[in-house]
Image (cartoon, rainbow, N blue to C red; front, side, top):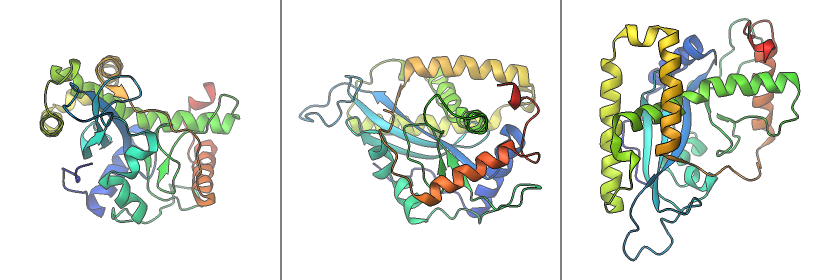
Amino acid sequence: MQPIYMPCPTKKDWVRIANDFEMKWNFPNCVGAVDGKHVVIKSPAKSGSMYFNYKGTFSVVVLAVVDANYSFVIIDVGGYGKQSDGGTLATSEFGVRLNRGKLALPEAKSPSGFPTALPHVFVADEAFPLLKNMMRPYPGKKVGPAERIYNYRLSRARRIVENAFGILAARFRVFHRTLDQRPQTADKIIQATCVLHNMLQRRKTSSCIANDNEDLEEETNCVDDSLRALQPLQPLRGNQATHEAFNVRDQFCDYFSSPHGQLPWQSNL
C-alpha cells in the first residue's frame, strides 16, 4: 500500500484525540477507530486476480484511522482487493509502524479512579487482530455480562469510523458506482476526497455536532449509505494474539464494569 498520505500525528495530537474519544464516546485512551473498505473499480488490464476481492468484484482497499469527530487522521490507499483481512493491515504503512512501535503513542495512563494504567489503543472490528495497542470485540454470542458491556463500549467508539466512511460516501457520489479508472488514479481520487472530507468536517458549525439527536440521526443514515456504497473487509479468521494483548482487553473490560468506568445505561443492554 502507498505510504501514509496525511502527516502522522504527534504525541500531542494523539493525546487530543484520546481526550475527545473519552469525552464524546466514553472510551478512555482511545487514539482512533480503524476500518478498511473496498472501493470498487473496473477490472484493470493484465492484473490477473490481484484486484479481485472476496465479494466477486475488483477493488482497491483504503485503510483509515478516524478521530472522534469523523475526520480521517491516517489513510493508507492502494491495497489489492485480493488481500485478506489481516493482510491489509500488515502490508500498510500504518500497520508496520504500529507493530514496530513507531507511531509515537502516549504512555499508558490510568483512567480517572481506576488503579491500573491502560495503554493507548485503536479500536477495530473482527477484521483486525487483537494487539496490545488495538482492541477488538470478544468473539462469539455467548459472552458474560462484563464482556458484553465491553463489546458495547468498543462498538460505541468504533462506529465513528463506519460513520466517517458513510459521510464520505454521502458527500462524494463517485463511491456509489464502479470507478472506471486505473488503480493509481482511483487511489488519487480516494486521497483527494478524504482531504476534502476533513476540510468540510472542520467547517461544520458546532450546532450541527452538539445536538445529540441530530448527530444520531446523521450517523444512522450515513452508516446505511456506507454499507451500500463501500464494501467491508473480510472478517479475520483466528486470532493468534499475545498474552499481553488479551490482558489489556481484560483490563479495559474490568474498567468498563467498575464503578469508575461504568455508564448509567450499559447495564440495560
